Length: 408
Ligand SMILES: *Cc1c(COP(=O)(O)O)cnc(C)c1O
Image 1 (spheres, rainbow, N blue to C red):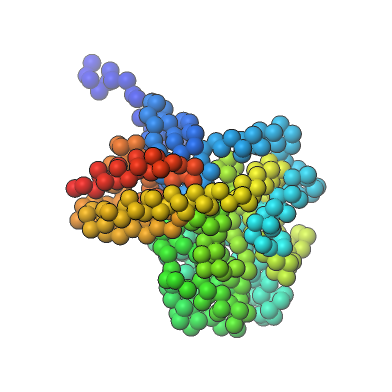
Image 2 (tube, rainbow, N blue to C red):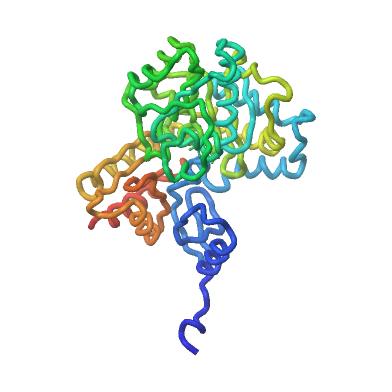
């Protein structure tokens, strides 16, 4: 027998073969098969440990298996998990109250995935446009940003500018206009009397941690007031302490009319999303006009209110700011030496790799070999977002690995 036939397949190879054999190929994962995690670290099926610097695209802000979240989830799992909204449950009310306290809003509407919360925001904005602003029925438009990422539904990809996300999914949903991100005059030129909302990420995460020019969010707020449009902040990735503040909008002291939240709202344990707004906006939703079988279920609500309680203490926001400064300093020394640029806000960095050196993908593969998990954003950018429970020593592991793989 040849070597090929006698060689045992590794557990890693076996799991990859199964996944690629039976699951659709909508992702191109790094070749690592994870089986457990604790805090900022995960372990693969062969017992190797890795520092998780993607953190579930910021869904794992509190790390893997945070004891406080696990305990609350276990308790609720044993008691009651699903009622549907046909009945009240004893977890949704407290969660709604806690999320309103965290956002400073009067009402919330719970959903499950981020994309569903974005869809909810779009529906609310249109309804608000017809019922409150007085836009003629069917005429509402919403302005979104070039380079956006808001999810994967048919309506949401209708205003995506990423060909991978849109090609061969036509026909698209109408009623959206796209303008360059960070450009206030382009935004003002695009609005008319039928514009009901401006939808934006206060920092574009999938776009490569793109931070708009200082004052941009305040400018958007002013334009929204001037033209009677809702400012909708998709804080699904940027919110809940990642940037060093509860919301990325807080950096400019801007309050949007609607927050869209997801990812870390479920503590990395469960899909939990929501929109939060005042009653003059969310009040346009009446019984039967929107809903979700799982949205607001007791397990989701229990986890969501524990997340709100953890964020109310401010500790995670402070950690993100302090650790983010440490990471940014560590990476800054490599700019001009393998790195073209580093953009950072809190514990969230977009690192542009010198195209003469390597691609984003090849850097993530090299980081994997050094025990660091990261994901490229677009092409040359590697996005770094370790869990906020990471330590400075953990960040040293990341910085040292980065230095080694960009050393050329
Ligand atoms: C991840 C993300 C979404 C979509 O969330 P899903 O839970 O994957 O549907 C929407 N907006 C932003 C900014 C995101 O980062």
